Length: 241
Image (cartoon, rainbow, N blue to C red; front, side, top):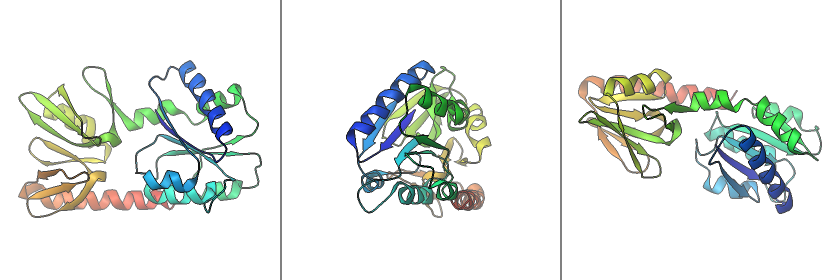
């Protein structure tokens, strides 16, 4: 689980971080990453779509961006990430609907409140939607995948952090895991790309974020372009919901 906390009061973000670690451990989550920012501007400076599973935003923060304004900018890039507002008042409930907020965490709060929130937003369902289980029973986060390549009965999973994971699995099995979700497509024999990572498609190559370039076959090029366009349109609609 990857979580961001954005609050201009260090003591408040530290309190929430401790509560989250306690509650996530109780719910059986392990090796969770929690990153803390002191302003909406700081969060947005390094933010990338798919970077986090859950983002906490204090509604009242110093600086030019309130929590609501920060959420609007996030939603322009990421329509899926869960957003929870931290506040001492429900006065901004109407604005939160416009950015598809998932929860209000009212101050003061304790372990019981944080646990109730985590159960309410159903992180288990979110994980099922955002992760795949590989044959070795390890999990792989979908948004971390740039592309996969198949050779000698193994699939190499190329990740956004530059690392590569190898798994013994057939290409057909990998296609069943990924391509049925509408976010991945086979661009040529043995290569599956994350549609959200595509920068450009030319006559014989697909250019991906991070600098990777993979081939595409003439037979699949038109279909891949259409699938990419459909993907972008779906996410544009979600972002404006």
